[in-house]
Amino acid sequence: MIVRRSALFVPGNNPGMLQTAGLFGADVVILDLEDAVAPNEKDAARELVARALVTIDYGQAQKCVRLNSLDTFCADDLKEIVPSQPDLLMLPKVHRASDIKDLAGQLDDLERPSQKRIEILAIIESPQGLAEVYEIARSHYRLMGLLMGAEDYTAMVGSLRTKGGEEIAVARSLLVNACAAAGIESFDAVFTDANDEEGLIKDTKLAKNLGFTGKGAINPRQVKPINETFNPSATEIDYARRILKALRQAEKEGSGVASVGGKMVDAPVAKRAVNVMNLARRLKLIGQGDD
Amino acid sequence: MKSVLKPAQAGTLESNDIMIIVEPGANGIVLELESIVKKQYGESIRQTIVETVKSYGLSDLNVKAIDKGALDYAIRARLVTALSRAGVGPEREGKA
Figure 1 (spheres, helix red, strand yellow):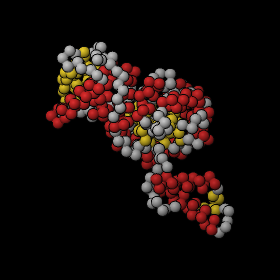
Figure 2 (cartoon, each protein chain N blue to C red):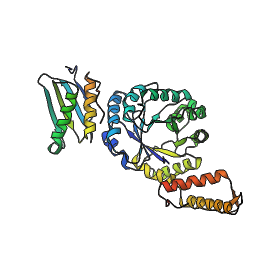
Figure 3 (cartoon, chains in turn yellow, green):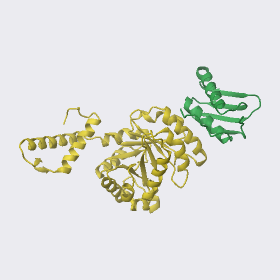
Figure 4 (cartoon, one colour):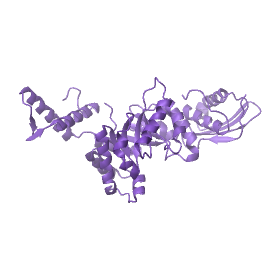
């Protein structure tokens, strides 16, 4: 079970930050070739990131590279980066399902037969992308998740970006629903004020409650609060444990129905309980035999 | 034999980075190295730069390197970028 709660963006043309990116506990490190790199430095960043991928030990973190968009430098990025075998490639400015298919086709051509298949994480950051989000979410087996790009999205919609995030409430829910329907992961937008930990935790709790499976981070300081917020709480674990116990008891007694606290346990509730316990076990919040 | 077509540079003067400037030369591979860790790693940095230049089949080149504590991978990356900008390349060796 791969856990991807936090995805930390790191500028791709900064050797110091590339070297330390794996030290902060992020589940995914995103080596950025897009916004963090000036157009006349794209060549230097590609060369550096390609070598960092095969040199730096990122520990447990999955290695992701944010490409430039399909209509800019993406093809050049792919030629340099694919041979270095990242786990994921992040594609920005995805407006339609054919964008994912286009990237996947290029990966089919560039990957070596023995290479582990690279997965795609796409950013939805335009009104058109959001309008077609479900078609995008189910477009290709390489697509493992979508990330909400709130800054570009609000600029294009013409709304004011706020800390409360009311302006992206519908966008967030649409994206989460599309991902859940397609069976892929959903990552919430980054919280851009790196000095406001309280605000970050509030924003991350909201994301978790909406159904997001993870969240982007723009500063190493944001990783720990994001991870801790996405971890199952003691209350969630206790409730999941009671549900599973009730199900076992019902099975033993030959009853088809279990209940906890007077509420019936149906299949989605049971599945959620199993997921909570699996995640807690994976994160070593409970012991291996604890069920 | 390949040659450098024009002067070029890559890298920055930030910590953990190295700025590399290459120019056409006529007297072999001439390296001018400044490094904050020259005492400890100067020879290793020199070796990395000369090896990489030779892997391109270049025999005459002036290189100025100002190192701020770059690791080997970053030194190679910056040199390869500088050479590419100078009109040499692309490199065909492994990325490690």
